[in-house]
Image (tube, rainbow, N blue to C red):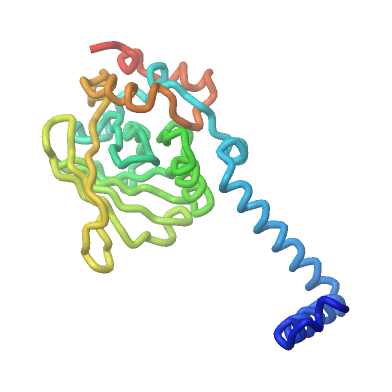
Length: 246
């Protein structure tokens, strides 16, 4: 072919390419696998660049914080962490509803809980690509949150594949006041603090909105992404206190 003989480098490249194609042609299954892999990579790249496509793939919806119904107070959860928290970490997670946690141990004294991060109505994320990519990671890796409750607040760690693989970082809390904790993301391997941030309780242990609720609405212009439970289920399980004003 004329385009192969313009230089020694091009000739070598052409020879290598033709050799590869010849080998693939001799093994149709390998050729098909290579074609499918290339197609998969192209689709994934396009998906990661398109908020609309990601939303459809993850079955997420735009939801309004002002009308979002959270779970009623869960008396199994200690009052120090019970309620809904606004995570001030930038783009990504917006709210986590700790009333939806499940006991990790049958012993009530242990105060250890867990939940799959993509459990419907457990959390909301920001309406942007960082929020969508975070949800995608939690979906693909089956990320699970593990929460231990003490007087300082929620002490959180994570695992992948439904608890089979612990992730190499955790997030301890330090109490600031009744509705605010200081959080850190810490590398378990090095002990270094990767990030510091705050979490504010927007729905308290009794199911009432706190003074931080309106600030959260203003921050996100009332719109976030979530995966709500069916309306009929939500109506039967939600507390009317959650939607009441202070």
